[in-house]
Image (tube, rainbow, N blue to C red; front, side, top):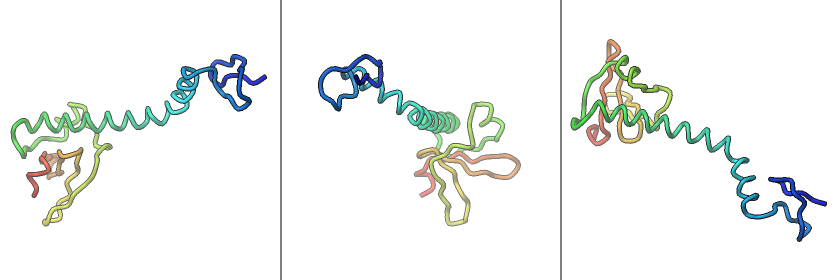
Length: 118
């Protein structure tokens, strides 16, 4: 007798049947994908948090200066970003979606919105 891969009850019906019902099939598949889904979800959450922090510094402005300490106190993680862009002067801006930052001297950062660089 074959058993359900999710609840381990005896299966009746087709020889190639793997699950009792849709609930067991969905439950099994959700548990299989949970580890990779959680990893991706955590990265997306970190990116969105970084974006919210940058947005809070900008307010209604398009460019503002702040310090590394102020970013860190608010929970900013420099490990997570979506992309980088270089301007004509060779400055490399790091972005979380459309909001980015440029490291300056003395632990200062220039926070910008993407359209402000065009």
